[in-house]
Image 1 (cartoon, rainbow over the protein chains, first blue to last red):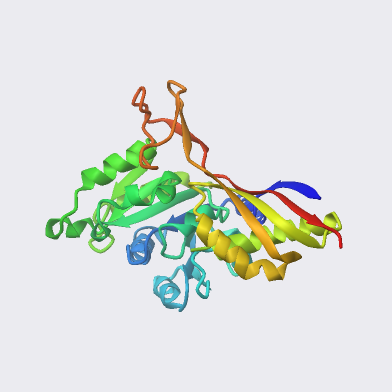
Image 2: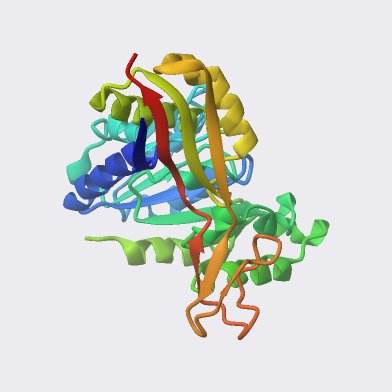
Length: 215
Length: 117
């Protein structure tokens, strides 16, 4: 006997992601899914973000890593609500993991929730977590060829943040290659060039985030 | 490498549908996997062999995968094309940048075959 199914194994995740989005939207919270390779500086970027707008925007952060609370400790040290998810070896986070930790936040007093995904330039792009926008961080030390090599991640990004631009004078990195590849696959992308360490251009991407807040 | 978790989702979907149809011996599963679905057919095959004993599958149950290459449509001139090297999405006819992926992102269970024994 042959049974037609025509069903995606991602359906369960996508349904939960939709519920997450509805719940958070109902509370007036804008949700960003922040993705990149390991070591691109996502956590440093969020530390700097906390310095720039932690006092004016009520924000919460979910940290995803295979192991340890180290990232969450860094964010909490900035006075920001933060919950750590450990995937115990898993290469991405899914919508159910996010739902499980949402109750640990004071959702009635939050405007912005940032999910720092597991460092990985492939798998996280397949999993909707219930976010409104996706941002991908690319650090200059990874090389200018990464956009073309990992198209599924960049094709779905709403914003790309090139980080560690203070290091460009010391390495061989052509930002024009990144721009050409990016805009050829995502012409209406928002593009930022920052250094989370020196704080250069951090205002630009903070403004972008503020512009998307719901309330 | 998340083919294992994708496969465990597939086995869930198939197992549920099988129990709705009173099927307890599944001999074959057919999947459709797009080039941009972030799931490699060989790794899915391996994951299926590892996980099939968790569902109502026969020992020699087989997995068939239909691999779908990426196809893109240009929103400006409406021409359809296969992106060069899999990632250049610019329209080869009018150089338009506003293009849409129409095939290659899908990942779903097409059908399965089995019996009630």
